[in-house]
Length: 226
Image (tube, rainbow, N blue to C red; front, side, top):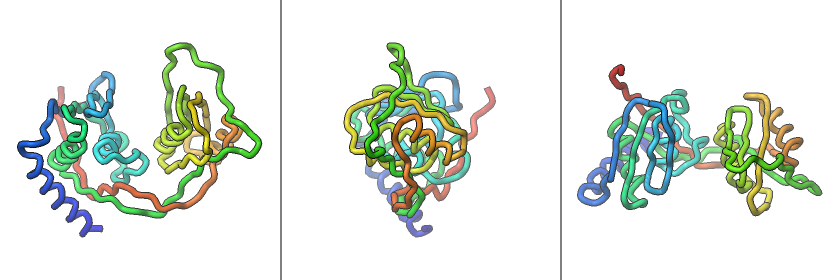
């Protein structure tokens, strides 16, 4: 693992050299968290309080639940503006910034981990909540998900990030749906029952080999008191 981390550090150093005179930021800043919206696009992020875990996921194009590192990654927040003119430059530049500013060392690794397979129940159909008012927005917490106009795959990915366990859509269902499911916080049997009773689907526990982003070293940034 240490050898992979060292190779990763060497790769980042090489990328830093490659970026000179080619990929450059259109706009970049980082500071203490504040109140305000969070916006993500192909051209970067403009956020007032993004968690470090979400920032890493965006930088390395992996789901949040596949980022493994210190306990503070999901709670430590920063205001980050990182915008490029060419979308293909974003990840390279953002990885470099994280390595330089947070002394980040990380590597990708395949591991056998607990997962859920989301499946249809034979003879059943997806249960949907009553239609939301026009302009209704999604609501996501540690014990419920309410989203509208979502594919089953997108719902599975959202659920995976909430429970921090990979969820694979194996329903074979196309199209978009409204989803609402609520369960007891931190209680996986409650979640399994809720998905069956409230959505008409089932979560099947399995173990599979998945690619994870392992954070070997990272340091917090400190900002002066306002």
